[in-house]
Length: 182
Image (cartoon, rainbow, N blue to C red; front, side, top):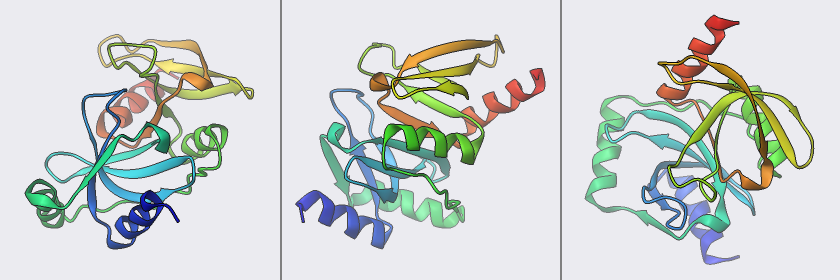
């Protein structure tokens, strides 16, 4: 068993709040509690800086450059989440492949939020509902921002997806607004 696998199990079992860094993709860490992991993916229940539920994030383990646990910042988040009585729903996200991740997130939330951090400098994400896919490509009804509320079709190469998110306040708001247009 690798050191990483051993620590993942330990952190998952203890519900340790961790900061996961993917330095070559993003300057920011992803903060939360490990909900699940496989040999290829990690599923994190994310927390805001106020200790509130920020949805889920699924990303490739190979993109992780470092993980921080313990310390005052994460203890403060734990204290805030306990005060807020922060709860996480248990989602059945299949971490076998990017195909199963996408379909199970879509099934659980009704939409996906996809990041393609390796090809775009501005960390743009695409929020939408999956309409069609094959082994290499995915077609989304892509939801616009709060201001433009446009729904358009977007086709992305699955190999370019670096992170799949759902359940955050912003993503949920965009999904709701898109549902009003249908």
